[in-house]
Length: 294
Length: 294
Image (cartoon, rainbow over all chains, first blue to last red; front, side, top):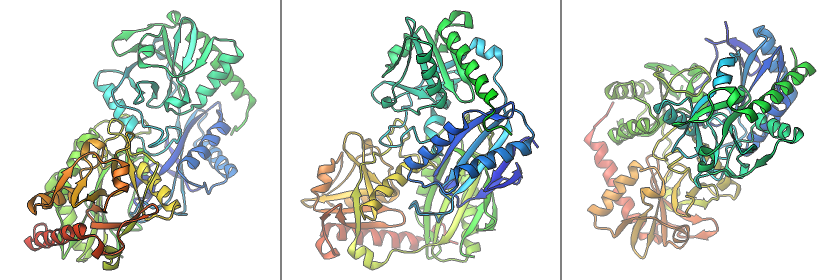
């Protein structure tokens, strides 16, 4: 058994892990989630992920019924049960089971935790980087569904990824309706131009990623020339270096955007690599601190 | 047992009706659906609903694995098993079960059919009408997620409904980013002004409802002054009569939009009532035809 599922406090195997078809997560994507991971039996930036889970809940008008401490206990006990040192962890909280109408009320929320082995990306991939496509699919507008709510409504991103795969890319980056770069399907995006590190401003409509926040802090602490501002799609194309950030990937370089090649090995992207070294050190220090270990 | 669920061809009761937590409908809202009903043991406009299900699948890049005839058989057999004369029927097709990454592939799709008693709206409600609110939540943009895909991504509508409920309304109507009226949370919207019947054009970003199409046909056949065009929120407010259309509600009048009262009884909305009579006759004729009976 390589996947351990915790449903409302009970740990079950993959085959038994089922949810009612009346669950609103299944019916309407009426749910929120977080993804994190553990390294050397320590969950990375768990407090930040839980802060964001509570923020996602607020953005969709859900008053979370589970205590924060109880949720941490379930995560830790499920990770322990898995006996895995390196786990991928996903938490989904749904608004609960209701009839088939969309009206919300104080249903009993369902909490599902997924723990499985974390497959780390290879050092070859970090050296080579990803091939992204700037797709025509427009990122959800904040006034329709704020990308800061990590919710069970993921079709916008799924359709963007489909479009990227069609042209042979690994993944997609999306613009907003004004032609400003927003984010990727599961990651934030960054550019380097003339030595300056830049990432789209949240007003462009994007998730304020946890790794993104950590890398902003690193830029400031290490005196990188840094700016958070609206970035046009043309500026993305014209960048010297491109990289992405996500909890599971950390800082991952981009070697190609559509047909344009940026840097095919780490030696060709000095700023990205300098930041990556800082980030790896940050993660190692965090793990050594032993917070949320099991 | 009042609810009958058919999961991949097997009819089960409400308690046993469960789906894997790895189903992409649960994980990502990566699913499509239709809602219809039966009256006097006849499914109403079933062919149109199936056409639209196939269209929704196309819009999210899903190649439906189930045959149309097989799906009809399952609907009919589940309705028969329920022994209900008047049913509410919902069909959900998910992209199937996958790992926790968002990439799509040729997974084995899950088909879930829900059959339950259809609670018809009272004649008092049809006489009084609904209280709607024009909410600030903006309808999903076509370029992000086309409202013509009836999908498991329903948070945009859920949040609109929450907003309407907060001000004491029954339901919500949404505009697009240009301030054009689009549709309600689960229905299309119509106005009457100086005797002319109007409904928003699909270019404003809305689901081309089946009842909407039938009412357009009725307008034309019965020589109502009719136009399908972009309608501003101000035009909605300034309307003489407002009504909505949906498969389960048919033509339902609106007596109040936010604080403005339009007509508090059917006598005060002559055009809506004339159309409603035509629509009731149309439905009766359809039922009498006995297509898709059980």
